[in-house]
Image 1: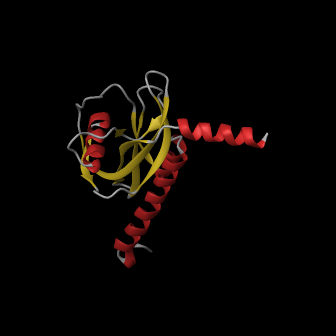
Image 2: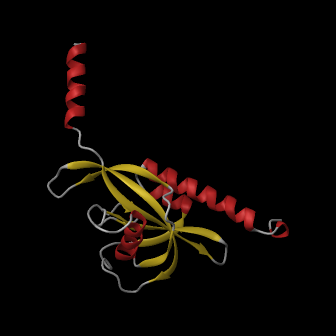
Length: 169
């Protein structure tokens, strides 16, 4: 029986498709009144689950620029995107033909400073600004949950470093 298990495992590896690459923007802003970090979550068009803006590679565009473009097209936000990714997460994408393919999503942060009233996918998705903690509760992918948590922790640490000692209490 051991040989059959081994053959089945080898067959699965042979037919496994390599992960397709996508690029995403973790969009954030500072809520002025409370100096609280807010993260933008949007719904996917197909299933309505909570995600962050992401898309496929675009010919001639660097990956961070793709993430920035997707943030505008899907959520109407503009701002400053960092050129270095904060990490990646994996998920399975269901294609139109029913095939499921593994996707690796490289994530870039985008500090939002402008919200557009008109953008390509307006009306096709719900958009909400939420705390990082709430964003973690809403998204499904474990890797994305971890990236959001780590980003919030880094943001808090950097904010405390920049804050004057007497302002920290």
